[in-house]
Amino acid sequence: MEKRTEIPRKSIYRLSIYQRCLERLKTNDVETVSSSALAKAAGVKSTQLRKDLAHFGQFGVRGLGYNVGALADVIVDVLGTSSLQAVILVGMGNLGAALSRYGGFGKEGFEISAAFEADPQRAKTVRAGVPVFPAEQMSAYVIEKQVKMAILAVPVEVAQSVANELVSSGVQAILNFSPIHLKVPDHVVVNSVDLALELEHLSYFIK
Image 1 (tube, rainbow, N blue to C red):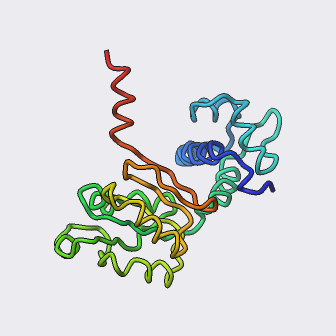
Image 2: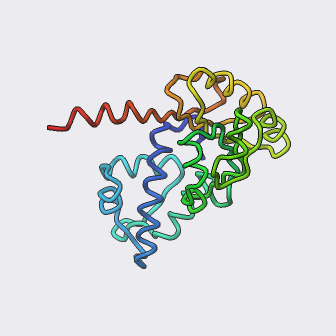
């Protein structure tokens, strides 16, 4: 199998989309699906679908298509979501608190095991769906639990320093909700979600 670092990030992203489509097919008791049908459901061209899957091996039978269950299992294994992955949440403002209460992460193979907040009063009073600890305990927790993924929902002025602490503690992947470009080492992956920017893009299409 090709090394993950050599596979385009967009291909990895599309794998998650394919997986969701396959799960819906499994729910509807569909056993096989053609590349064109799966690609249409995922919103991509069939050539793109086949190219993405080719990074991980040969799948499907000409004239029959893909076995839905088998392909879903392969993608789950590739994405590393066959067992729950621990994730920590940093920042318990309105967004962080809402994320902590979201129940859909477990269905996709992720578990927010703990949250961290710098404001002692907020840490005590926030309505959260997970245990909330003082920010100064974050590094020790990451090291002890060997946490590799974190969700960052902190104010922009502290985002880089928090990211630095996460990386130095062993975190290798960050989902960043702070509107700032984080500088991290090459071995660390950052996906940024700028909600205001996304709304700005959408506004262009409103007539």
